[in-house]
Image (cartoon, rainbow, N blue to C red):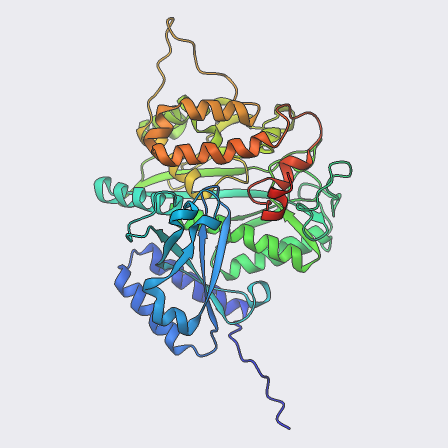
Length: 478
């Protein structure tokens, strides 16, 4: 009897994967035109017989990542006519107008490590369009891309970003969905910053996750346990703002799947455990023009340019208005606690880690600003878009005797943040009336399911109704 395997799906060694994904990233960064990219990848998909499916990823208004697998043969014949039910996605279409179209961003292509994603698949990002094939107004990724295109054409600006994403590794599969506030999360490691044992379970998790993201072209820099027990952070290179936003979604996906493969849960709740540091997503931004870093000025204050300082002042002036985008859950406001290095002060500093914005040590190439008040559960596309647009187009607050100065601290709870967001003209300017309204509605519904007073214990409600955790059964069991 022939013992030939029944399946021969594509499985690529990690070293080859890295090279292939770096080439894909290079094509994307070089802004190769859409038709050329489309022809290149369609030709590859037709030739590669070991592929069984194309995974298309997209994100909802709150930033939750969704995926649809299309049979490869079906995809090749129907890629220009893909649809999905938008009424099943929170914040998208109403039931009466549910169908949405799913276009393909041909440059956003990744070959996948088969031990994490399964064999025989590739990943591409989707563009959400309405029934008339126009960009869907609730697609934050599309809005970010459109704005970056405008900045490129109008000013020849190229925006770079990098995110430092922290998380916790806790015991058990689906630990968030079955969370019990009387017990809390069970940590897997009691080590801490830099000094966990080489074969500690947290270190093994970090190693496996780092290997997977390296293979996907992240260009890793460093990874390590964070300050709190069972906390981790994996850093990778500065890159184009859209690629950076996509990589946040893939980073979280990799960590969650690797943890599950190990019988555990990777959680990106900003404050899953009281009494220790929370998890942030420090967001670094700079703007270049024709290879020159516009945020650098050797003779400027802190060696930053006037553009950079105006960018900082505009974000600080509107910090309360956009706080809900940066800290978008009930749980996120537990993290803004000054006792645990929380960046809740509306100020800029070169040394104070309690400041909302920090100016890291830099040279001409690396000059940037670091927004430290971002929670790990922010929608990455909405986050980066709102920071760039506020920094470039927001108004700088003028303080005089007739007007109270802006609050010194960021909101301490989500309801206060919602009120600032609701009253903000800036938010309506950058998001539009309809997106602003839908975002408030989603956040208010989640806020109403939790006590107004956070208290000293992480509650069931702020975990199981969290936008990255909830499912239909949990939400309807209220």
